[in-house]
Image (cartoon, rainbow, N blue to C red):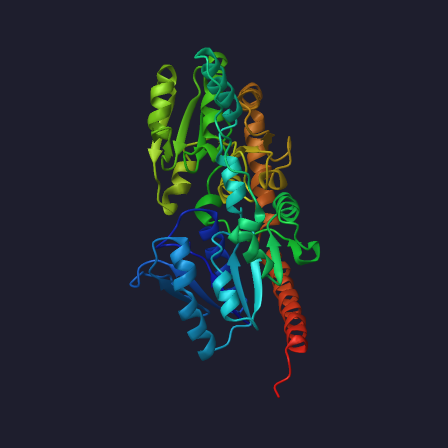
Length: 416
Protein backbone atom coordinates (compact mmCIF):
# COMPACT_ATOMS: atom_id res chain seq x y z
CA UNK A 1 0.00 0.00 0.00
CA UNK A 2 1.14 3.52 -0.79
CA UNK A 3 -0.26 6.46 1.18
CA UNK A 4 -0.10 10.19 0.55
CA UNK A 5 -0.20 11.90 3.94
CA UNK A 6 -1.12 15.59 3.67
CA UNK A 7 -0.39 17.78 6.68
CA UNK A 8 0.58 21.45 6.82
CA UNK A 9 2.25 20.62 10.15
CA UNK A 10 5.06 18.08 10.17
CA UNK A 11 8.15 18.29 12.40
CA UNK A 12 10.81 19.45 12.50
CA UNK A 13 10.15 22.37 10.13
CA UNK A 14 6.55 23.01 11.13
CA UNK A 15 5.72 21.89 14.67
CA UNK A 16 2.62 23.73 15.89
CA UNK A 17 0.49 21.22 17.75
CA UNK A 18 -1.27 17.89 17.74
CA UNK A 19 -1.78 17.56 13.98
CA UNK A 20 1.95 17.63 13.36
CA UNK A 21 2.58 15.26 16.25
CA UNK A 22 0.04 12.81 14.85
CA UNK A 23 1.47 13.01 11.33
CA UNK A 24 4.97 12.30 12.61
CA UNK A 25 3.88 9.31 14.74
CA UNK A 26 1.54 7.92 12.07
CA UNK A 27 4.08 8.09 9.25
CA UNK A 28 6.57 6.13 11.33
CA UNK A 29 4.00 3.63 12.52
CA UNK A 30 3.00 2.91 8.92
CA UNK A 31 6.58 2.89 7.64
CA UNK A 32 7.67 0.38 10.29
CA UNK A 33 4.96 -1.90 8.90
CA UNK A 34 6.43 -1.61 5.40
CA UNK A 35 3.87 0.85 4.01
CA UNK A 36 5.28 3.54 1.74
CA UNK A 37 4.29 6.97 2.99
CA UNK A 38 4.77 10.21 1.08
CA UNK A 39 4.28 13.22 3.33
CA UNK A 40 3.30 16.54 1.76
CA UNK A 41 3.91 19.24 4.36
CA UNK A 42 4.65 22.94 4.59
CA UNK A 43 8.18 24.14 5.16
CA UNK A 44 11.32 25.31 3.42
CA UNK A 45 12.51 23.33 0.45
CA UNK A 46 15.85 22.67 2.16
CA UNK A 47 14.29 21.32 5.35
CA UNK A 48 16.38 18.66 7.09
CA UNK A 49 14.30 15.53 7.54
CA UNK A 50 14.78 12.42 9.64
CA UNK A 51 15.08 9.77 6.93
CA UNK A 52 13.27 6.44 6.92
CA UNK A 53 13.40 3.92 4.13
CA UNK A 54 9.60 3.97 3.67
CA UNK A 55 9.00 7.70 4.21
CA UNK A 56 9.46 10.45 1.64
CA UNK A 57 8.82 14.05 2.71
CA UNK A 58 8.08 16.76 0.18
CA UNK A 59 7.94 20.29 1.55
CA UNK A 60 5.61 22.86 0.01
CA UNK A 61 6.67 26.47 0.53
CA UNK A 62 3.47 28.09 1.83
CA UNK A 63 2.81 30.60 4.58
CA UNK A 64 -0.80 29.63 5.24
CA UNK A 65 -3.01 26.56 5.19
CA UNK A 66 -5.06 28.01 2.32
CA UNK A 67 -1.97 28.54 0.18
CA UNK A 68 -0.68 25.11 1.15
CA UNK A 69 -3.93 23.39 0.11
CA UNK A 70 -3.64 24.90 -3.36
CA UNK A 71 0.12 24.60 -3.90
CA UNK A 72 0.36 20.95 -2.90
CA UNK A 73 -1.99 19.76 -5.67
CA UNK A 74 0.62 19.83 -8.44
CA UNK A 75 3.27 17.80 -6.56
CA UNK A 76 0.67 15.31 -5.33
CA UNK A 77 -0.63 14.75 -8.87
CA UNK A 78 2.91 14.52 -10.25
CA UNK A 79 3.95 11.91 -7.71
CA UNK A 80 0.73 9.95 -8.30
CA UNK A 81 1.49 9.82 -12.03
CA UNK A 82 4.99 8.55 -11.29
CA UNK A 83 3.94 5.99 -8.65
CA UNK A 84 0.19 5.79 -7.93
CA UNK A 85 -1.20 6.28 -4.45
CA UNK A 86 -3.74 3.83 -3.04
CA UNK A 87 -5.00 6.40 -0.59
CA UNK A 88 -4.78 10.06 0.41
CA UNK A 89 -5.16 11.09 4.04
CA UNK A 90 -5.59 14.68 5.20
CA UNK A 91 -6.89 16.53 8.28
CA UNK A 92 -10.25 18.27 8.18
CA UNK A 93 -8.77 21.67 9.04
CA UNK A 94 -8.20 24.01 6.11
CA UNK A 95 -9.51 21.90 4.41
CA UNK A 96 -5.95 20.99 3.49
CA UNK A 97 -6.72 17.97 1.35
CA UNK A 98 -9.92 18.93 -0.46
CA UNK A 99 -8.28 20.15 -3.67
CA UNK A 100 -6.04 17.08 -3.83
CA UNK A 101 -9.09 14.85 -3.27
CA UNK A 102 -10.80 16.49 -6.23
CA UNK A 103 -7.70 16.40 -8.44
CA UNK A 104 -7.39 12.61 -8.00
CA UNK A 105 -11.03 11.43 -7.89
CA UNK A 106 -10.21 7.72 -8.27
CA UNK A 107 -7.98 7.55 -5.20
CA UNK A 108 -9.43 6.60 -1.81
CA UNK A 109 -9.80 9.51 0.61
CA UNK A 110 -9.46 9.46 4.40
CA UNK A 111 -10.29 12.53 6.44
CA UNK A 112 -8.67 12.62 9.88
CA UNK A 113 -10.65 14.59 12.44
CA UNK A 114 -8.68 16.73 14.87
CA UNK A 115 -10.84 19.76 15.70
CA UNK A 116 -12.72 21.65 12.95
CA UNK A 117 -12.27 25.41 12.95
CA UNK A 118 -15.84 26.08 14.06
CA UNK A 119 -15.24 24.06 17.25
CA UNK A 120 -11.92 25.82 17.83
CA UNK A 121 -13.76 29.12 17.63
CA UNK A 122 -16.36 28.01 20.15
CA UNK A 123 -13.72 26.85 22.61
CA UNK A 124 -11.69 30.04 22.24
CA UNK A 125 -14.68 32.36 22.74
CA UNK A 126 -15.01 33.95 26.14
CA UNK A 127 -17.82 32.42 28.20
CA UNK A 128 -18.51 35.86 29.61
CA UNK A 129 -19.56 37.26 26.21
CA UNK A 130 -23.26 37.44 27.16
CA UNK A 131 -22.38 39.35 30.33
CA UNK A 132 -20.37 41.82 28.23
CA UNK A 133 -23.37 42.19 25.92
CA UNK A 134 -25.67 42.84 28.91
CA UNK A 135 -23.35 45.50 30.34
CA UNK A 136 -23.23 47.20 26.92
CA UNK A 137 -27.05 47.25 26.77
CA UNK A 138 -27.43 48.65 30.31
CA UNK A 139 -24.82 51.32 29.63
CA UNK A 140 -26.72 52.46 26.56
CA UNK A 141 -29.97 52.67 28.56
CA UNK A 142 -28.28 54.85 31.18
CA UNK A 143 -27.37 57.22 28.36
CA UNK A 144 -31.01 57.32 27.24
CA UNK A 145 -30.55 55.34 24.05
CA UNK A 146 -31.20 51.85 22.75
CA UNK A 147 -28.24 49.86 21.51
CA UNK A 148 -27.11 46.27 21.57
CA UNK A 149 -23.81 44.56 20.92
CA UNK A 150 -24.22 42.13 18.06
CA UNK A 151 -23.51 38.50 18.70
CA UNK A 152 -20.86 36.80 16.56
CA UNK A 153 -22.27 35.66 13.24
CA UNK A 154 -24.19 32.41 13.49
CA UNK A 155 -22.33 29.40 12.19
CA UNK A 156 -23.72 27.88 9.01
CA UNK A 157 -22.15 24.63 7.90
CA UNK A 158 -23.20 25.35 4.31
CA UNK A 159 -20.65 28.20 4.31
CA UNK A 160 -17.89 26.05 5.85
CA UNK A 161 -15.26 24.77 3.43
CA UNK A 162 -14.16 22.18 5.99
CA UNK A 163 -17.66 20.72 6.03
CA UNK A 164 -17.66 20.43 2.24
CA UNK A 165 -14.21 18.84 2.40
CA UNK A 166 -15.58 16.21 4.78
CA UNK A 167 -18.29 15.30 2.28
CA UNK A 168 -15.57 14.23 -0.17
CA UNK A 169 -14.15 11.59 2.18
CA UNK A 170 -14.61 7.85 1.81
CA UNK A 171 -13.67 7.34 5.47
CA UNK A 172 -13.78 9.83 8.35
CA UNK A 173 -11.49 8.79 11.19
CA UNK A 174 -12.14 10.23 14.65
CA UNK A 175 -9.63 9.83 17.51
CA UNK A 176 -12.36 9.57 20.13
CA UNK A 177 -16.08 9.29 20.82
CA UNK A 178 -16.54 12.91 21.82
CA UNK A 179 -15.17 14.49 18.62
CA UNK A 180 -16.94 11.84 16.51
CA UNK A 181 -20.32 12.59 18.03
CA UNK A 182 -19.86 16.37 17.94
CA UNK A 183 -18.84 16.54 14.29
CA UNK A 184 -21.23 13.85 13.07
CA UNK A 185 -24.12 15.78 14.61
CA UNK A 186 -22.84 19.26 13.75
CA UNK A 187 -22.20 18.39 10.12
CA UNK A 188 -24.98 15.77 9.72
CA UNK A 189 -22.43 13.27 8.44
CA UNK A 190 -23.23 9.75 7.34
CA UNK A 191 -22.47 7.76 10.52
CA UNK A 192 -21.53 4.76 8.37
CA UNK A 193 -18.47 6.70 7.21
CA UNK A 194 -17.33 7.78 10.69
CA UNK A 195 -15.10 5.36 12.56
CA UNK A 196 -13.45 5.82 15.94
CA UNK A 197 -9.94 4.72 16.83
CA UNK A 198 -7.23 6.55 18.78
CA UNK A 199 -4.14 8.21 17.41
CA UNK A 200 -0.85 6.33 17.86
CA UNK A 201 1.56 7.51 20.52
CA UNK A 202 5.04 6.13 21.02
CA UNK A 203 6.40 7.42 24.30
CA UNK A 204 10.09 8.29 24.26
CA UNK A 205 12.57 6.64 26.62
CA UNK A 206 13.25 10.09 28.04
CA UNK A 207 9.62 10.22 29.25
CA UNK A 208 9.36 6.61 30.37
CA UNK A 209 12.61 6.76 32.35
CA UNK A 210 11.47 9.67 34.53
CA UNK A 211 10.84 8.57 38.13
CA UNK A 212 7.25 8.89 39.33
CA UNK A 213 6.93 11.72 41.91
CA UNK A 214 5.93 10.90 45.47
CA UNK A 215 5.31 14.45 46.71
CA UNK A 216 3.41 17.51 45.57
CA UNK A 217 5.43 20.70 45.35
CA UNK A 218 5.23 21.95 41.76
CA UNK A 219 2.24 21.84 39.43
CA UNK A 220 2.86 22.31 35.73
CA UNK A 221 0.88 23.42 32.72
CA UNK A 222 2.18 22.43 29.27
CA UNK A 223 0.91 23.96 26.04
CA UNK A 224 0.09 27.23 24.39
CA UNK A 225 -0.89 29.93 26.85
CA UNK A 226 -4.25 30.71 25.24
CA UNK A 227 -7.89 30.67 26.42
CA UNK A 228 -8.76 27.41 24.64
CA UNK A 229 -6.27 25.54 26.83
CA UNK A 230 -8.05 26.63 30.01
CA UNK A 231 -5.21 28.86 31.12
CA UNK A 232 -7.53 31.64 32.32
CA UNK A 233 -9.47 29.28 34.58
CA UNK A 234 -6.25 27.76 35.91
CA UNK A 235 -4.87 31.14 36.92
CA UNK A 236 -8.20 32.07 38.51
CA UNK A 237 -7.95 28.93 40.66
CA UNK A 238 -4.45 29.63 41.99
CA UNK A 239 -5.34 32.24 44.66
CA UNK A 240 -7.75 29.79 46.36
CA UNK A 241 -5.12 27.05 46.20
CA UNK A 242 -2.41 29.24 47.71
CA UNK A 243 -4.70 30.28 50.56
CA UNK A 244 -4.66 26.69 51.80
CA UNK A 245 -1.34 25.48 50.39
CA UNK A 246 0.97 28.53 50.21
CA UNK A 247 4.09 26.47 49.53
CA UNK A 248 2.87 25.13 46.16
CA UNK A 249 4.40 26.48 42.98
CA UNK A 250 3.09 26.65 39.40
CA UNK A 251 5.19 26.27 36.27
CA UNK A 252 3.83 27.33 32.87
CA UNK A 253 5.62 25.57 30.01
CA UNK A 254 4.85 26.90 26.55
CA UNK A 255 4.59 29.98 24.33
CA UNK A 256 2.42 32.93 25.34
CA UNK A 257 -0.24 33.73 22.72
CA UNK A 258 -2.04 37.04 22.07
CA UNK A 259 -4.75 37.91 24.57
CA UNK A 260 -6.73 41.09 25.30
CA UNK A 261 -4.42 43.44 23.45
CA UNK A 262 -1.24 41.92 24.86
CA UNK A 263 -0.12 38.33 25.41
CA UNK A 264 -1.36 35.82 27.97
CA UNK A 265 1.74 35.87 30.20
CA UNK A 266 1.73 39.67 30.38
CA UNK A 267 -2.01 39.71 31.07
CA UNK A 268 -1.56 37.27 33.94
CA UNK A 269 1.27 39.33 35.38
CA UNK A 270 -0.82 42.50 35.22
CA UNK A 271 -4.02 40.97 36.56
CA UNK A 272 -2.55 38.78 39.32
CA UNK A 273 0.51 40.56 40.78
CA UNK A 274 -0.22 39.12 44.25
CA UNK A 275 0.51 35.52 43.15
CA UNK A 276 3.52 36.08 40.87
CA UNK A 277 5.88 34.79 43.56
CA UNK A 278 4.35 31.34 43.00
CA UNK A 279 4.46 31.38 39.18
CA UNK A 280 7.21 30.61 36.70
CA UNK A 281 7.01 30.97 32.91
CA UNK A 282 9.44 29.11 30.66
CA UNK A 283 8.27 30.38 27.27
CA UNK A 284 8.40 28.11 24.22
CA UNK A 285 10.33 24.88 24.76
CA UNK A 286 11.80 22.67 21.98
CA UNK A 287 10.21 19.19 21.88
CA UNK A 288 13.43 17.48 22.92
CA UNK A 289 13.48 19.52 26.14
CA UNK A 290 9.92 18.70 27.19
CA UNK A 291 10.90 15.60 29.27
CA UNK A 292 13.35 17.68 31.29
CA UNK A 293 10.66 20.29 31.90
CA UNK A 294 8.15 17.66 32.99
CA UNK A 295 10.74 16.28 35.39
CA UNK A 296 10.54 19.58 37.27
CA UNK A 297 6.82 19.10 37.89
CA UNK A 298 5.03 16.68 40.21
CA UNK A 299 1.51 17.06 38.77
CA UNK A 300 0.26 18.42 35.43
CA UNK A 301 -2.91 20.50 35.10
CA UNK A 302 -4.46 20.48 31.60
CA UNK A 303 -7.92 22.09 31.97
CA UNK A 304 -8.67 22.71 28.29
CA UNK A 305 -12.05 24.05 27.30
CA UNK A 306 -11.95 21.42 24.58
CA UNK A 307 -9.48 18.84 23.26
CA UNK A 308 -10.35 16.27 20.63
CA UNK A 309 -7.41 14.09 21.71
CA UNK A 310 -4.54 15.76 23.56
CA UNK A 311 -0.96 14.65 22.84
CA UNK A 312 0.22 16.84 25.70
CA UNK A 313 -1.87 14.71 28.01
CA UNK A 314 -0.27 11.58 26.50
CA UNK A 315 3.21 12.94 27.21
CA UNK A 316 2.25 13.97 30.73
CA UNK A 317 0.85 10.53 31.51
CA UNK A 318 3.83 8.75 29.95
CA UNK A 319 6.14 10.85 32.13
CA UNK A 320 4.55 9.33 35.23
CA UNK A 321 2.94 12.57 36.34
CA UNK A 322 -0.51 12.61 37.84
CA UNK A 323 -2.72 14.59 35.48
CA UNK A 324 -5.69 16.82 36.29
CA UNK A 325 -7.29 16.86 32.86
CA UNK A 326 -10.36 18.30 31.19
CA UNK A 327 -13.56 16.29 31.00
CA UNK A 328 -14.37 18.04 27.70
CA UNK A 329 -13.12 15.84 24.90
CA UNK A 330 -10.42 13.26 24.47
CA UNK A 331 -8.71 13.43 27.87
CA UNK A 332 -11.83 11.92 29.41
CA UNK A 333 -11.15 8.82 27.31
CA UNK A 334 -7.52 8.59 28.48
CA UNK A 335 -7.92 9.21 32.21
CA UNK A 336 -9.92 7.00 34.56
CA UNK A 337 -10.98 9.43 37.30
CA UNK A 338 -9.69 8.39 40.69
CA UNK A 339 -7.51 5.64 39.16
CA UNK A 340 -5.13 7.15 36.61
CA UNK A 341 -5.78 10.84 37.23
CA UNK A 342 -8.52 13.38 37.84
CA UNK A 343 -10.96 15.15 35.51
CA UNK A 344 -12.41 18.65 35.90
CA UNK A 345 -15.18 20.30 33.87
CA UNK A 346 -14.18 23.16 31.56
CA UNK A 347 -14.59 26.79 32.65
CA UNK A 348 -14.38 25.83 36.35
CA UNK A 349 -11.65 27.43 38.50
CA UNK A 350 -13.37 26.01 41.59
CA UNK A 351 -13.11 22.45 40.27
CA UNK A 352 -9.42 22.95 39.44
CA UNK A 353 -8.73 24.27 42.94
CA UNK A 354 -10.62 21.39 44.57
CA UNK A 355 -8.70 18.81 42.51
CA UNK A 356 -5.33 20.30 43.42
CA UNK A 357 -6.22 20.56 47.10
CA UNK A 358 -7.44 16.95 47.14
CA UNK A 359 -4.00 15.82 45.93
CA UNK A 360 -2.27 18.08 48.43
CA UNK A 361 -4.32 16.43 51.20
CA UNK A 362 -3.51 12.92 49.95
CA UNK A 363 0.00 13.10 48.41
CA UNK A 364 0.19 9.31 48.11
CA UNK A 365 -2.24 9.68 45.18
CA UNK A 366 0.41 11.61 43.24
CA UNK A 367 2.42 8.40 42.93
CA UNK A 368 -0.61 6.14 42.49
CA UNK A 369 -2.15 8.20 39.69
CA UNK A 370 1.21 8.77 38.01
CA UNK A 371 2.03 5.08 37.91
CA UNK A 372 -1.43 4.01 36.72
CA UNK A 373 -1.59 6.76 34.10
CA UNK A 374 1.76 5.78 32.60
CA UNK A 375 0.78 2.11 32.37
CA UNK A 376 -2.59 2.94 30.79
CA UNK A 377 -1.32 5.32 28.12
CA UNK A 378 1.53 3.05 27.06
CA UNK A 379 -0.83 0.09 26.79
CA UNK A 380 -3.80 1.71 25.06
CA UNK A 381 -2.01 3.91 22.49
CA UNK A 382 0.89 1.66 21.51
CA UNK A 383 1.42 1.75 17.72
CA UNK A 384 1.13 -2.03 17.52
CA UNK A 385 -2.39 -1.73 18.91
CA UNK A 386 -3.45 1.25 16.77
CA UNK A 387 -1.92 0.02 13.49
CA UNK A 388 -4.52 -2.73 12.77
CA UNK A 389 -7.33 -0.26 13.46
CA UNK A 390 -5.85 2.33 11.12
CA UNK A 391 -5.17 -0.22 8.37
CA UNK A 392 -8.74 -1.49 8.65
CA UNK A 393 -9.89 2.10 8.14
CA UNK A 394 -7.71 2.41 5.06
CA UNK A 395 -9.14 -0.80 3.63
CA UNK A 396 -12.68 0.45 4.22
CA UNK A 397 -11.82 3.68 2.40
CA UNK A 398 -10.38 1.79 -0.55
CA UNK A 399 -13.50 -0.38 -0.81
CA UNK A 400 -15.74 2.68 -0.53
CA UNK A 401 -13.73 4.45 -3.24
CA UNK A 402 -14.18 1.46 -5.52
CA UNK A 403 -17.96 1.60 -4.99
CA UNK A 404 -17.97 5.37 -5.49
CA UNK A 405 -16.01 5.09 -8.75
CA UNK A 406 -18.19 2.26 -10.02
CA UNK A 407 -21.30 4.34 -9.37
CA UNK A 408 -19.67 7.32 -11.03
CA UNK A 409 -18.85 5.27 -14.12
CA UNK A 410 -22.38 3.93 -14.28
CA UNK A 411 -23.79 7.46 -14.24
CA UNK A 412 -21.40 8.78 -16.90
CA UNK A 413 -23.01 9.15 -20.35
CA UNK A 414 -21.77 6.79 -23.00
CA UNK A 415 -19.47 8.26 -25.64
CA UNK A 416 -21.24 8.23 -29.04
